View 1 (cartoon, rainbow, N blue to C red):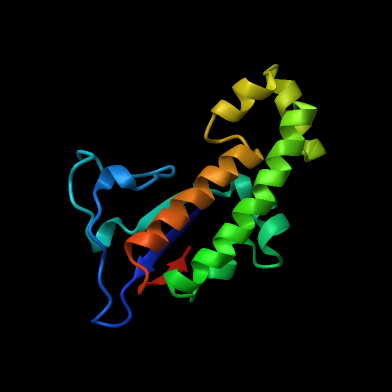
View 2: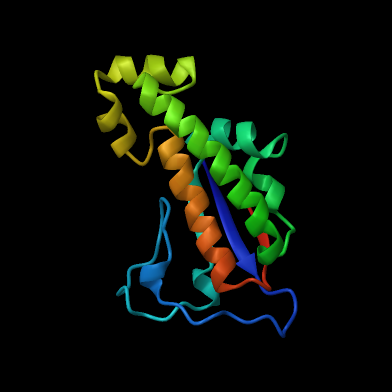
Length: 153
């Protein structure tokens, strides 16, 4: 399972700032293209594994990452950056411990026989470092199309 999160134009005057595909972060799915290709409206989306949901609920509250749905990108940026800061604090704790903050995730890491760095290197494994990368991708979207509105799932 995953979150499909995108920005949509709700007013015809909203515009996309000049950006290239190389400036977009990508999640689990993406279209194949060169990094120099211009971003268009269909590219304003990010697929994020649901494996990070626990982190999103921890930093964004009851709705998790869905709390930005319906928000204009320029307004969601502050929410996302606040969550980013909270995730960085969790990441710092995890790195100090050398393990995921959540005990279930720690048990999963142990069962895989992986060390902390190897575990976090996989996009699919839940750790604050990976959740931060996803939030960073959403922040990048807010800078490319600030007048667009977040939607998802």
